[in-house]
Amino acid sequence: LSVIGLILHPDCMQCNPRVDFWQSALMASRDGVIDDSQRFSHQRRVSMKFGVFLPNGSNGYIISNAVTPYLPTYQHNLEITVEAEKQGLDFVLSMMKFKGFGGDTGYWDACLESFTLMAGLAANTQSIGIIPTVTLLSQHPAYVARMIATLDDMSGGRCGLNIVTGRNKPEYTQMGQW
Image (cartoon, rainbow, N blue to C red; front, side, top):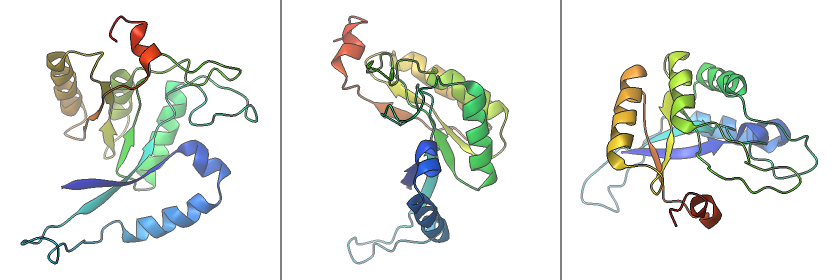
């Protein structure tokens, strides 16, 4: 059983000095063992995983006019992924959005496609886990299975999958899926 313990947003790491404290504390305990023998009739080992939620949507995870809006780029996400691998993190995860929230900042109005982004990152890294996101309403399961199998082969077995249901009605209404 793998448990994701912490997802660090690159934008938060730049602007929040407390992240360094939490990152140090969590990295020190990341290989720890949780003994559930008191709760369950058997023992099980739980290995925490730590990773980065990539900023593959416009403006990353900053909903503010205080920061100059920016478009997502492969190069920016590659730099973050290479650094995460260098720091010993376990995975990178990208979201999938089909419609942003607009407004003054254009928050998430542009988004790099998750599987294509992850394939490029897998080709340029050696050990970090690669986790694309699929939204259930937008993709046929057989097609997703083929994409994830291909990505897993390309990455040498480093691929996972983030499955989300989709909660943003306007995002799916525009495609006739709501």
